[in-house]
Length: 281
Image 1 (cartoon, one colour):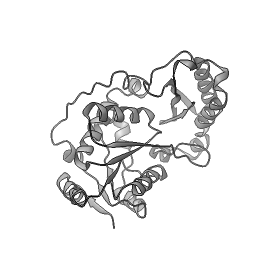
Image 2: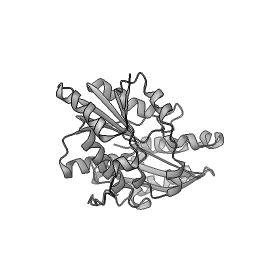
Image 3: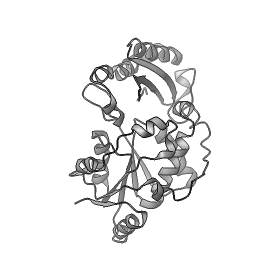
């Protein structure tokens, strides 16, 4: 049976009991609207830890678009039903007032990590993410925390925060979970119309095609190819395509300049904003 808590005190009491018994704590932070991508993280956490905590918290301070926050799906009962059988032991579902009894004005210095890609188009987003995740780590004190690689930049930010603050947690990156047609699983997919959903795999198709052939082109040429292939579909408007170093998230001019490269995409299909990425090498 899954234990549901809403307050920090009862959550910490339940977790500290497990720690006192020598158990390891696996943690998967979410904003709810759970799908198979989340459940994959949770099952992995259950395989690698003695006790698994899932947080369900729609973090208001990471939304720079109020409409996005208002439309974000919330159904705690449905989420808990999905968690049955995954190995989840405790769900922490706090309110914003519980998480932030006072405004948290922390300003993190992530260098260039939060200035590019998502950071360029969503100012303040990653600072809000980092504040929430730091707070959750303080409450849950996990041994390992699991994050999906779909939010590639977010994962880099979390790793940087853990390093800056020397938080004793192992961050475990997990591969993107996709639908059978390649669309990266996302809570936002539920907002797609049937027509949009049918077209949505175009992003992954474009990424997959350049993974096979990227070395034939310079990085800027690959960027133009991906942008062009997506925008050939009249449903889409590309916000950005970036080809960056997987460590610094900075662009480069020659494939030999970096050890590992990733292509990251954000594109609108109607009013729904989708992100995806593929590591080239």
